[in-house]
Amino acid sequence: AAQGILRRQALRESAARTYARALPVVPVRARGMTVEGADGRRYLDCLSGAGALALGHHHPVVLDAIRAVLDAEAPLQVLDLATPVKDAFTDELFATLPPGLAARARVQFCGPAGTDAVEAALKLVRTATGRDGVLAFSGAYHGMTAGALAASGGAPSSGPSGVTRLPFPYDYRCPFEVGGKHGAELSARWTEKLLDDPKGGAVDPAGMILEPVQGEGGVIPAPDGWLRRMRDITAARSIPLIADEVQTGVGRTGAFWAVGHSGVVPDVMVLSKAIGGGLPLAVVVYHEDLDVWPPGAHAGTFRGNQLAMAAGAATLAHVRENNLAERAATVGARMLDRLRQFATGRRWIGDVRGRGLMIGLELVDPEAGPAGEAGNATPARAAALPADPGLAAAVQQECLRRGLIVELGGRHGAVIRLLPPLTITDEQTEAVLDRLTDGLDAAIR
Ligand code: PMP
Image (cartoon, rainbow, N blue to C red; front, side, top):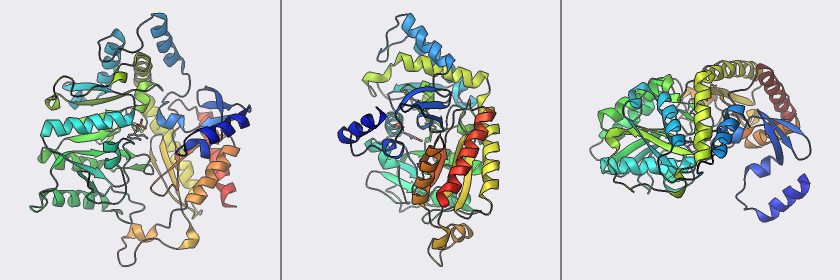
């Protein structure tokens, strides 16, 4: 049956499908972090719906919340009408916000995906400031709709879309970026210089958008000091700072919101994935001073998904009440520790990095010699070997063979990414590490 489904999918679905190619699993049942395929095989799931399933599959508190909506015969879709379910979700959401924002926050329900909320955030700051430009970072990922896509991307450049790309502090690999010990400071100075250049009239930013930990870009945590510098730089110039916490939110990085590590309070937060408890939900939260758009300025049919709000409220409450952010920090540190030990002496594991339960291993080709342009090499550049996406793909397959689902990412597709649920047990943690390290060694042979 599984083979038939895969064959028909390959014939009928878009050539743009991705996961289905690398992960020929036909999931039929799932609970916690275990997924069972149609062929009866069981996998430990470190993809977690690309981070949407903070509590894993079918967590009882999420199921109960969904059942309660159904049992009450509450309407499932309500546009932006007020409901008890939305009221409860908003209560929970506001209870988790950074203290500097919570008291004066507004929420705009968008929908249903992260990329929709990114569009809303960009539109909001453009409306509020009357300016058009957007400051974004190399390697960023914000989504697949036009505005979000324009703010995503590669090397620093000034694009045609009003987006100016700045260098993200990527300490390990930086062909066009700033890295090394002083990377964060160089990035900050670059940004200041650009904004204060009297000839830089083309840069008239309505806002700056950043990920506190770049996810799709290769699991790259922004240094806390760098985030604070960006906050200072934008605040001094009245440029709203947008934190895209679509992937980093809800405890994932070891703080409820990743901006919490640095104490930075953004003007705008873009939230999706885990806030819907696995169902589609996306919101923009922002300072009330920005709330100057008129009624109807941002609309959408699927802003009122009550099942998602109920599942999301239950998820937010469970993560908060059970301190799962702290648990993510502890388990993540344990995983990083063991993976770093494992990487010692294995030159093809170029870098092991992450924050909380957002972990990445960048695979490189030691045979190919150092990457980067001669004469333009910082110490970090000199150290970085060329990325090896082929090896990363092989590791993913070896992991799958061992019953472990992992995701790939990074600028070159050479980063193995782990996004296990925050509910991962100690036993599961060890099993993930065993299967992953076995898979890594098997792929290199
Ligand atoms: N922002 C970030 C940081 C993301 O990681 C993603 C999705 N990976 C998005 C935005 C887009 O979310 P969606 O896929 O739900 O549109």
